[in-house]
Image (cartoon, rainbow, N blue to C red; front, side, top):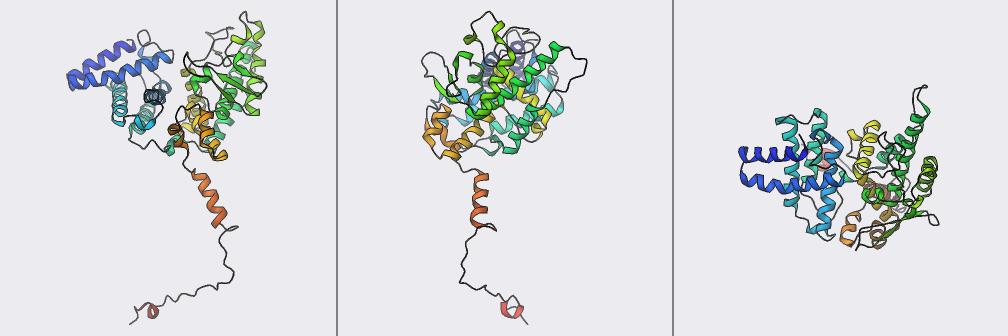
Length: 370
């Protein structure tokens, strides 16, 4: 059964089990799901239901927020929480129908539990002038992700050279993706559209190209990210391609179906990369890590270091400063560091001339004696 056929079956089920009104309301949320899947390279009209993996399902959360934010002109205050909640209810209801009632989607109970938790958090009404704590990763989580990505290959000795090279290209690409997102704050949709001709070698950055009518913007990479990107591109040896070098994607597929062709990644592919690394490193058990997580981390670190809201807005490519203000909250780490500095054992407010106050806590002094 295709995804489109499953959606129609689910809407028929709603009409029978609940009401025509519910089916009509949920149909709008499921149209958004169709748009999201198409943008991920998963056409719902021709893709089988079992292609709906956990990372694809949870990726809808970020996509919907970005979509609604764009519809609201970049102002998160204009996003209707009730509308957003209805869309999430429609989609999680669809997945519950596939997994439990129709048994068309084979997910483990752990995967199903993770799916429900992600959608429950996303549907929760929350202020849009702050960044929810569960959206911001700690430095420990970022370090765990990097350690997992940088691990050397551990392949059997009899692995063919061609397969060894393919696996090493995947490893180098994943490192470059994480370092690039971490130091530039790019959206994953911007990252997958980058071409080699967009790279700015003189400043170690890139020009992010948009569709007609939108201004392009410049992003910068850290020295480590730039080195990772160049190491990956040198290992790819793109000069063997017939196409102009400048038109080739910076980040390419290395699955067996791609073969020797240099094909661009999709946003879904990058989401799958993060899901796999988070699973292997144990991050998934304590934090819902997505590519967009690194954008949150970049924004908070950049604003914390510069203290400049307008500059952070420029770095993120936000059209409205309202969107950027969610990062203006003081980070818990900054608060703890400052508190230790002011009131800790090495800091503190010292009044040298005062003698310690002696407090009599006897029953007689407190008035409770016999």
